[in-house]
Length: 228
Image: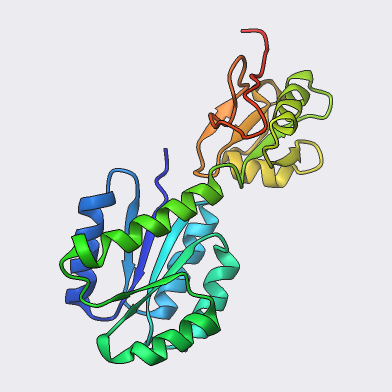
């Protein structure tokens, strides 16, 4: 299972390593922590994550990037990961500018460097951001890949509709190139479909007799029934 990413952009190497250590100690079992020291390198890394269909939960970014305007960075980063939460890394002297920037760039929260001790000045903010992000992506981004002639595929789609769970439908014949990219195969074998692709990249092939999302819906708790 591919872990979602906590992404840090900070040019102070000592501070960068400190925040990385603190995040890995607290969240390392469920999240990957990726760091970079410049906005342009960060955009390159984010594009690579996008190409890999990775999930980015939070982008921590220095309010004053050294190599590009932070507004330009955020515009490009959000074009790739619109669901990611964004937290500014600020200093005490940037208080008024931080408030203005939060409003201007629609920032979710901020952290005052050096974020120590983390139990007071890092983890509470991160916990709140992750709770919001996890609630948002728990069902968003779900994709079902199959053939329009498949009864199993229609069964899964009907289940998701009944339970008010949003999903994207990919028709294997019409969306073959995208399906090959998602499944990382050169040829699509219909015998291995349908496939449910979760937001974190996990895939479930021909799910039967179980909720394909493994999530409880406010609209009901129906189960997909099918042959074993």
